[in-house]
Image 1 (cartoon, one colour):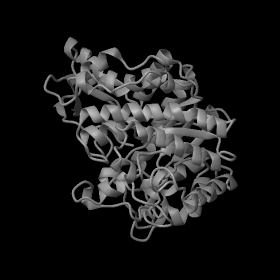
Image 2 (cartoon, one colour):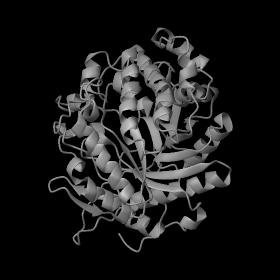
Image 3 (cartoon, helix red, strand yellow):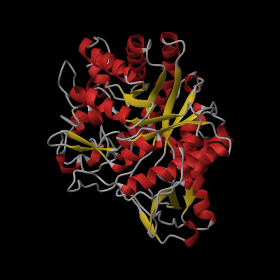
Length: 473
């Protein structure tokens, strides 16, 4: 979870775009959603597991990247993270205690296949075997994501995602995991946010592996999508009743100014940010205007690639945090000649991201109208605020609570407008290693004292327990 952080230009926020601050709890009810709605929390392996060299696991690109001075805030590393590798029963107890019925997690590729392919690490697979059993024992539905950015370092050294061989290695990895866990896991996602792993990792350079080459980034993006499409038949062969999808980070995009230049910029930016993924996954190929803008940086595409990418999925996962407001910028580092604008006079999270729940309604209805993707799940939604432990040992995170309530209300509104949203997952279960921000940015419903590893359910988590019908948390 995170987005491309390019150069920003400040604009004053027009009055019609301002958001009133919420000063009380919204009157939303669990009864306003179907009985079988999926309520869950999301995590990712690298951000919580720790144990980076235990039981046969070898480094991922994020291990390598975070060990290099200056890449991570405060030079933090994920060597211990939340120690979930050893504390997973306690963490799953927290999910159950807060009343959720679903748990979204990812598998660490280098824990299962330390070299990326070839020799299987039995102890690594055993860990996920125990984890899945623990999820089911607590009455939770496991949602498994195969790739949440932690590419084995060995595969990066062999070329990384810009190499077509890595797409093939991913298919082998999908086979290994689904053959072992597919008798119990029925809900699968191939990738989480290809934008981040490809564009931020290979072009912007703020994420692992830290490259800054647009051509390699777009080739990486193509191979990630290709590996998604090629893995789907393997997942379905191993798990005949599987529900398979992919998770995208999407944003509604608005013009900074009421002028033709910025309206045109919106379309160009949308081509790279949203349509690049949605068009290809829904059988339209890559947007022609974006391909032309990329010029020599456009990916090399072989016959059959686009058909493979467009393989039918059972659901679409959408991660939503904020909208993007853009302006025409001929000098931009982006081929779309646009710049994301940081707005003044708007309500923001501690990360500086605009709080814009109505954007989720807009996004869901736009995707529904333009692509008819079928069932949709909000697979991540949450916010960083500067949490502090109170004198009574409590964590009052009203800002996060209000953020979540307003976005659940947006989901309810989208459903009322005919969008088949069947799940909502809060990001995240635990405060964790927040990528380039290290441990500075907390998103969890559960506060983690990283010195002692003590867990404390925040006010937002207690609200969920009440909302979902648990007496207490």
